[in-house]
Each structure stands twice: as C-alpha cells, then as structure tokens.
Length: 163
Image (cartoon, rainbow, N blue to C red):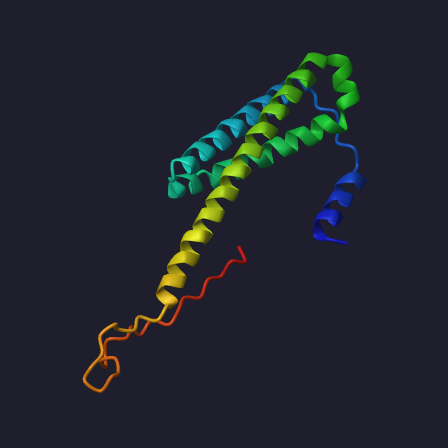
C-alpha cells in the first residue's frame, strides 16, 4: 500500500468531525480560502507564462498555506454535508462553483508548468549536447594533424532529470 493510500484510508476511517457551531461561517471561511487559492494559482500561472520563474516560485508558500487551510475547512464541511445542506444549501452550491473554478485554474496551471519543464529540459539538453561535442580544430599543421592545444577540454554535462 502506497503512502497516499494509507493517508486516504486513515482519513476515511477518521472519526466524524464535530458539527461546526456556525456552518455559515465555516462555509464563508472556506469560500474566502478557495477564492484566494484560485487567485494565487492564477498569479502563478501568469508569472510562469511570462517566464518569471523566480517570482512564481515565491508564491509556493502562500499557495501551500491556502491549500492546507482550505482542505481543513472542506473536510469539516464534507463530514457534515448533510446537516449543512439542510441549513444552508446555497452555501454548498457556492462552494461547488468555487471548486469548479479552482479545478479549471489548477488544470491550466499544471499545463503551463509541464510546458515550462519541457522547455527547460530541452534547452538544458541542447546546451549539454553542444558542450559535449568535440571542438576539434579545422586547421591542420605541417604534419597533417590538428594543431595541439586547440581542442576544448569540455567533455560533456551531466543532467539530473529526476525532479
């Protein structure tokens, strides 16, 4: 069993979370976190498209914090969905719309990240191939051999692509 499956099973077997005292406030807090997560993901995607990788990477901590907050609130809502649906069905519908927006934004974000990764690997591989080629001189000395000392000492580049 993989670590992800173990965590999923533990969450499924976890005791039901207590009903929030104010379901409307929990749903409102989840909606705020969800919208902030969509905005941060959108900003990250925009920066990645513009080639601003350093600026995009600076959003990672905020994105992780918002995701963690949202997941905690969503878990509480999910565990008490039947009760909340009775008391405030409009809030659940609003959250579902927000989740659709998040899913759309995350799909776009992942597509842009995959493109950036692919381009980066292509550029680095191209540079490595160029550096790895022998730089033999095209001129020959009076012995019929290339002149000594003009061959490049660079033999290649090692690239770790396990990220």
